[in-house]
Image (cartoon, rainbow, N blue to C red; front, side, top):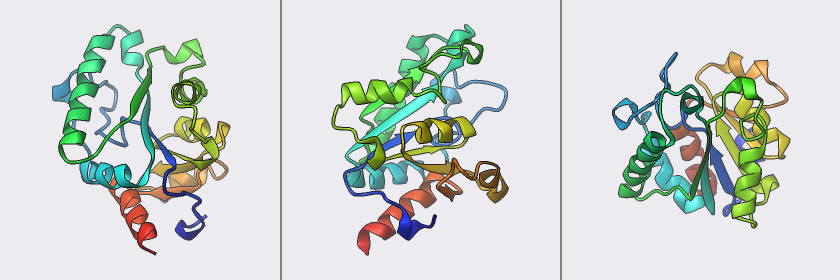
Length: 190
């Protein structure tokens, strides 16, 4: 699929993974406090574009650091409050954040690639149409989460070979969130 075939309409819903998409992923560790959080380049500008194009913007994130006892839900809420503040400060927005604190081994329905967080968002915002929604993530579980509810999936990776590992899961590949937002800007002007 290429950009002109991308079926994203103005007013669609955007779902985003957090670590590795919005902020720098801490390999082998977790973002446990705001000082650990680092926006990836261009992300704040991307949110400005997304906020004018998408009707709703949600973050869906697995946070098993809570389940492992390395942080609390209160710690996570503080990180998310500051992240939202920084995004709103530049003119962007986030309409909701859904997270799963459960361990991977739990196979929790709320944990991606399972669809619990998508269904929770739909319950909270009944106008969501998954077929007119986009899931942006950096892992196979993000892509599978999106595909299971019929979303368009966008993989964030600077390695084309990664997307070839999941040919049925990935609709489009972008090196980062900024590149995806620039394609939205371009598409909305034609």
